[in-house]
Every structure is written in C-alpha cells, then in structure tokens.
Length: 101
Image (tube, rainbow, N blue to C red; front, top):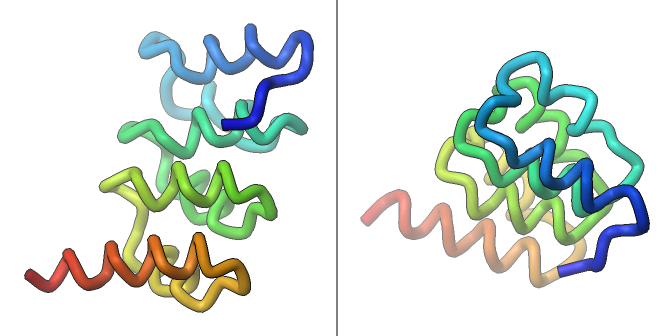
C-alpha cells in the first residue's frame, strides 16, 4: 500500500467513513492521492458510476482495490483482464475464472 501524502490520511478516513455515502463519496473518487481513490474503490457501497470511472485509473493500488470489490461491474473486470500490467490482468482473469465456478 502506498503511504498517503500529508493531509491525505484524513481524506482516507473520510472516504472510508460509513457515514459518507452516495454522492458525498464522489469527490474522494477523483482525489489526487491514489490512497484516497483506492479507499473509495474498496467500498461495497461505492456508486456504480464511480466504480466504472475508477476502472480507468492509472494507479495499481486503485485497480487492485476495484478488483477486490465484489460490486465492481463485470464489464470493468473484463476490461482490466487486458491491462498492460500483469499484476492487474492476472487479478482480473482470476476473478473472472472464480465467477464461473
């Protein structure tokens, strides 16, 4: 996990706060710090639009969090199966395989 920049740790806490939901999560989904975006991507109550948008993120931390989230749409997982980084593509392929067991 990447260590958040100073100030970002407070935003990570807010992004993980169960009281922050729905549209209130969206500013954290576009935060400049990957650790904050990964926190949003990991939430099972993350809005669908944010999950889809985060699927285009360049951070491996964010993409890994998305693939660990059971609510990430299969279309995002399928697209990540073709990711250039084998760590992401392998996780996505494994998730797709597990979906058909």
